[in-house]
Length: 273
Image (cartoon, rainbow, N blue to C red; front, top):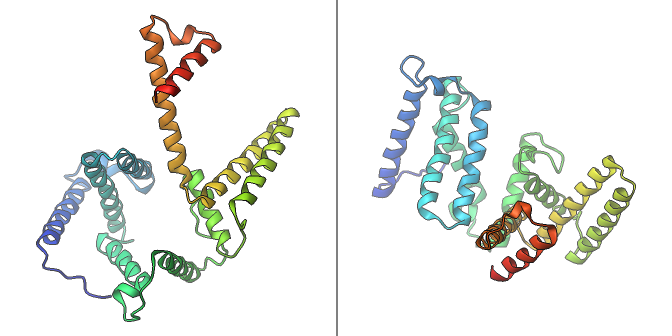
């Protein structure tokens, strides 16, 4: 692997800080002098915290809270250090092997930067090259199916979009958004039929198909369905809270109003936000 040794002062400080963090984690996991809670943890028990920290990073970015982001990135880094320490204890891997592996991957997937091919690539060309690199890795891991390796633990919307991108990679895709919109209408009709029949199993299946098609439309529009839905949820929260405040300013209690009254306040909150 190409040498990454540097004398840059900022990177030197980063290396020292990382060594300190690794030492802290090693001490926390020390069987005799460590923290009882930390000693008891394993990959499975730490996993929920890892996922939670990733979402908190996303939340800080979406709110443009850069001070909060610094803290959340630290918490996420701690998760990697935690898993690395546990892996080291049972001889699976360690932080150095993790860092070396991802460094090797980045170098191999960017030959136009680290290699000698002398080829300049646009962002879109590099994205295609990146996917080719990932495909090679899947073959090396004996993942022969197009959809192999898409983690089931991903958020449902993200997994759906990733599955669709994989399928689109071999041409299994609508040529334009119009085809997806037509498919959404078709799925909605099928959902309505299931609702009319009060068939819970069919309703569940058709609603899933409807959502899957909506994710496909987001992909064609180059939108992140997770980010779009989070933004819509945040908008709903803002309007609902504005509605609550308006109701209480008039000396009323939201839970005691009729739906028609709530709708009136809701329309006001929409105009104000």
